[in-house]
Image (cartoon, rainbow, N blue to C red; front, side, top):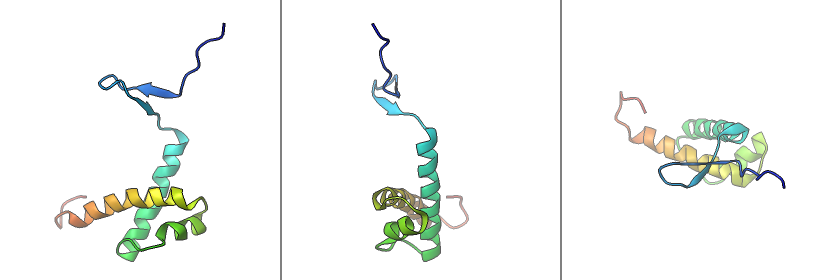
Length: 88
């Protein structure tokens, strides 16, 4: 009899739901979000085709960059709505 295989996920005690760990994929995603956030700051906000442009410039698929742009937009909009002189 073989040992049970792990799903690579950890159960959250409060909810019992399973979540994925960090790992290299998360680091890559965080870098992509940082690149997208920099692009949003340089251009003054979102514009159509930004994810495709980033995919061509940095490699990867459009959909992954679209997710990174969406995450970066949340941060960018939070920064823009913050009062002047307060940290984002």
